[in-house]
Image (tube, rainbow, N blue to C red; front, top):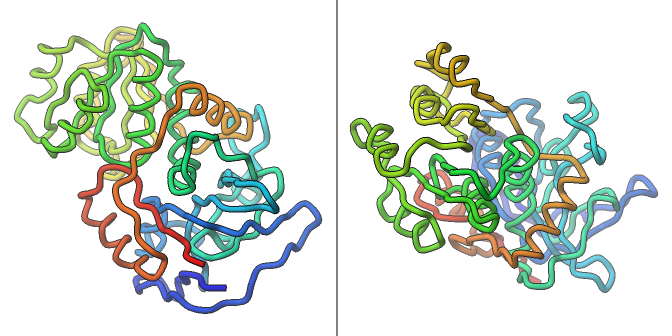
Length: 325
């Protein structure tokens, strides 16, 4: 089969012929992939900024294709059983694409229980864009932050896959949803998709300007952390829930604890999700006919160009890789 292989860290992926995967256990199946999608996880692994890197490895956590006569997508959260409140020990829990070979290939080996029918309203490319971002967004928004239609929501840093899925879920729920970005174009696109409004977090006193327009927020979803996190607690309502699933700008700085305890705030860490949450996410997406926003689609042979696009930060939505026959 043809696959995109990371031979060493900090090098371009090599798109080349490799042996087809075969099941190692009776519980495993081989999915013929038609589309895959990139995540920042792939970029961080390529750059050597991820724990437990091994080479060579085929990257990619998201994928959709065929299993027998069925169109299927893959839950990349492996060994996190239904109902478990957190993943098992790191030696047991895995995310597809490292250490096991992932979806940037014609075929992938996965546990049978991690394969699900594609929601009928989704194309193969849309289905490939859903799993990791959709699951992460569902858990942080519903399982952790307990979103309701009565909440006012802020999605901090709109444009990436998880942020956009959380945004789409919040809008579908009926919650008043606002966004931030450094890009006026991304804010405009979010408004076209149903946002009540947005503001550039690069503006001076953006937090004060935003609350003047919108009021305080009941639910805030963040993946940046860093110096800006302290402003999020300032714009949070009393009893608000702040869900954090990433730390792209580094350790949290400037957090005033008095605000946290006087406002009775809940700061909730979250990542990926369990099997029950994945099934519930698919049901939610099907009921509301939600389609992941796709930024661009590249053929597998142009995977390095796709990774460069992700590194630029210019994307609005998921970057999808088409697996050609």
